[in-house]
Image 1: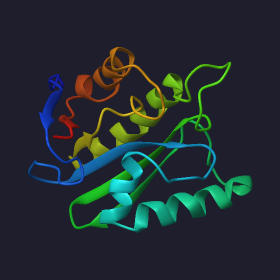
Image 2: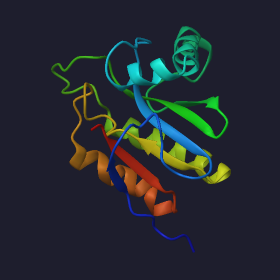
Image 3: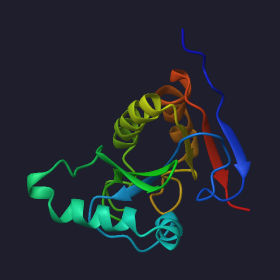
Length: 161
C-alpha cells in the first residue's frame, strides 16, 4: 500500500531543490512555443537544455505529441531533470479566462508521476500555473495531491524568498 506524502511548501529556490536522490523540477509552459517571462527564465538561466528542447518540440509539433497535457522530461545534470509541462493556452487572459488549463495540469502531473515513480524521484516546483498563467492555488494544490502526493511521491513547492 502506498502512503500519502504530504505536500511541503518552503521558502527557497526551485532551481536548487533540497532533497536527497533523483529530483524532477516541474513547471508550466504555454502552447505557443514561446518562453520569455516567469519561472522559465530562472530555468533558462541555470540550464539551456529545457528551453532548447521545448522550442524544438514545438517546431516539430505537426509530427509529435506537443499539445496541452503533454510533457517532456529533460536531463539537466546528474540527478536533476526538468519537466516541461504544456498546460497553458496562449499567454494572455481573454474571454476563455486565464491561460492555465487545469485539465492539462492534471494530465501533465499524472505523466510526471509515472517518471517520478519509475526513478524514485521527488518532485519540486514553484506554485505552478499561479503566476502569469493566472491559475488559482486552491485549484492547483488538490491536483498535486491527487496526482503526486496520493501516490507516495514527495512534493516540495517553493515560494521564492
